[in-house]
Amino acid sequence: MKHACIFCNRRLGENDLLEQFPVGRRLAYDAEHARLWVVCGKCRRWNMAPLDADERGGALDGLERTFRDARWGATSDNIGLARLDSGVELVRIGRAPWPELASWRYGRSLARRHHLNTAGTVFLACVATLAATGLPLLPMMGIIATGTMGQKLVWRVLKLKSGGPAVYRGRPGGAGDAEITVRLDHLEHVELAARGESDWEVRAMHENGAARISGPAAVNVLRHLTPRMNYEGGTRAEIRDAVERIRGAGHPSQVFARVARSASRGARLMKHYSRDEMLAIEIAAHEDAERRAMDGELALLEHEWRRADEIAGIVERELA
Image (cartoon, rainbow, N blue to C red; front, side, top):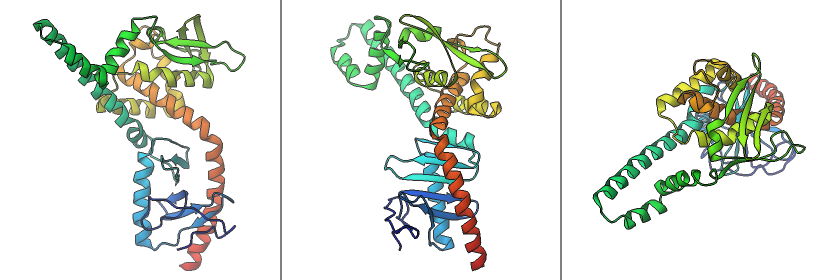
């Protein structure tokens, strides 16, 4: 088994993902055409993996599951990139089924948030019932203070004091703008306002007044605010509806303006939005921010893939 790049002879590194081919720190695959490459970290050339059809099929299935389960990544129309906790990178060739990937990437964390919130509410209700009976609460409060329920209770108490902890602090318009601090109680007044067919802005209160934020800065602000606003998470049905709402918009970046234009609520305050709208905004904000951060890398990968794909086609025709 070759562990060095055939172009520059540098070592390709190792991975613990593929039993059939534990070589490489950046793996590229095309499930539709059953192709697998190891991308050299030095010269960035693509080395075809010397696996037979059965081995390659098993490897591709495993890579596809791992790609969908990745916590950090982005996709374009033709290519996707995921970075795993181990440091291994996966390059997926072909149009990814975005709604399915979104459900995998965000669904479990949002559902877990929902379950924890429900459990915390029930637990606190039980404590209140015990308090009404006059039973000693000190042991019970100790349990609360050391667990997830305790963290939620402390969070709610903090909200009542000095506006609560900061959920966003920064200069949304760039280095030249004044720094703003948005605290927990300010989330009650966040607006998403349409400024045209596809233009929109965030209007947020902060410690020193109010700010109107647009463009990529607005997406970044929403990325920080929405997890706090969606502290209840969502059921699987609500998450599915949120993903379908994004698909209906055509692209994650189109969700913000589309929701902002909706007049069904009669108000622009985001606290009045439906659960699936809020979950869609949170998912879209994270997806759009990751996509912007990785656009240059994705474009370069697509160029390299097309060159490697031509070579793979020639090799396959010669072997046929």
